[in-house]
Length: 526
Image 1: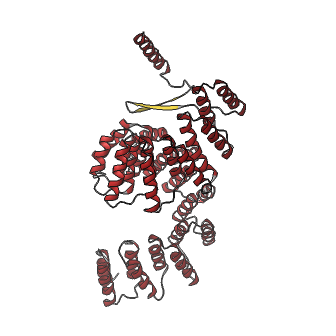
Image 2: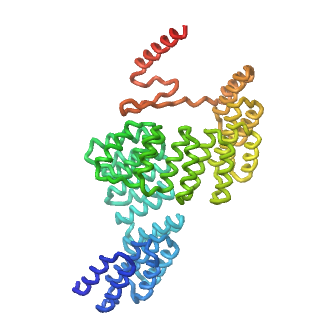
């Protein structure tokens, strides 16, 4: 490499903005390197890695158009430039042009184009690229193979991904991680765990994929157990692993484990904490009921994103501080943060728990008219619950009628189930019967919860014969009630208790304590 080329490359490395890049590009011309493909590829690479610099992609296109005989490297770089700027059709157009010019794609081109297929949500195109790569004989390359597996897993086709996995002669840790994540995405946690167990060497990515997979599938206790196993190794958790663990703590109410993670983070190399980690901690404290710590964390985050605001609003709503949640919503607007659909689910829930029905309707109007957010089934379910809890059954029925033609059957069922629950709580027998009939008509699957709600309502209303009739109907239809499950955290260990089961190792001791408590209560009531 000549000294002039080196000087140009040094200038390119030092570029901090587009003005610097243009100066370096001018230097390329003055040194006679205007046709040097390596130097030009560096110019394009700068543009592709700085998508937030205004005009960088336009500049890259101008540079590319003036290159007389682009190499595969040049084509790869401009395809990547379009890819990172989410100009997927343009990237595909350049790829086609590359083929038309008789150039042979390499093990960098195919992975870029596979990501384009994902961006375009076009599995058929991805399969065509797979077939083309097979003809070229490069699908056995580990980089190409992993990219193929990633593409198939994004589309949920783990069978095709597994086929690629089995064809790769020399697998990498990324290969195992991709398959673990792929199976977890489609809900096949058992297969994901088999891949995890069979991985010859488990790096941070493999551990993280399995822990995250458990959390995605609501196997929170398993994720914490796996995290403890990981701590017995020399693997140092990264941000993604901590986020998954904190999510598991939030769902289990495992505050002690969450506090330990917080303390560990304060001593780790991840300090100062990112917004993502801070938000995960905030969410964990809020869901575990430690609102004071959650508020302190919230106030300490300098650049709050919408996820951060939503976590705090949801935490306040969950624990009965509806007014605080609504106030925070309006504070968010004052700070210029635009709410999303999740924000409105949180504030509707806050209004429901706090009996603020009219405030909820006011916020619905704001969601529709100010932010143009189309209500989803979750919003309608919250609104029906909100109005029903407040005893506004006619208004709730109006909402249900409005959504009958706009939602599919499963979403309409959610609204009727919320209405049914509220009717039962208010002793509205006739409306409850109507709602139960609607639920059972919309969803042919056997729902024990519907029968249990009706049976309890009849019992409390003194209609014991009707209650027995519903119970008998449950038996005939085989609608057995799903056993209740609760969990408690003691000294960092989460114990689960399922109704009717006696599998806990300390069950005898627990029953002894309960009997003592009952005796004490009976004595005090005498």
